[in-house]
Image (cartoon, rainbow, N blue to C red; front, side, top):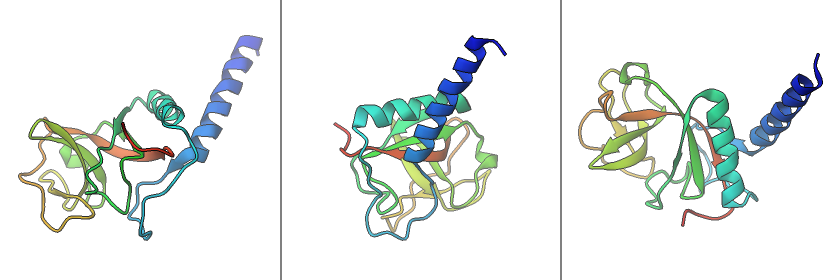
Length: 149
């Protein structure tokens, strides 16, 4: 193998290892609070971007509304994969556009007619999620030690 190929693989392995240490899964949390991290916000964002580039995904930062507590709060940076509404299953965390904003909530029904609700909320979000409104499905979350500014 050429030295440049070996160096590229070494860098990829180092990034992957660091990112995997920082990633939290997107399953339903039994904790009474969102997970924490010692990563500065900038480092967490860079790690999320690195993972999204490796997975052809995108990144979404969570706003401080509290609607997804205890799963995560505004320290979370969500890594998304592209999908259609038909791909979504109840329990998936998705990002949808609603009233001009990106909303990070959990799917409470299977696609193609997907309904969503925040984990801390009792009421469903308005309307079903269409393919045009679906930004993506969460595949991981990286937490920073400080919230979104």
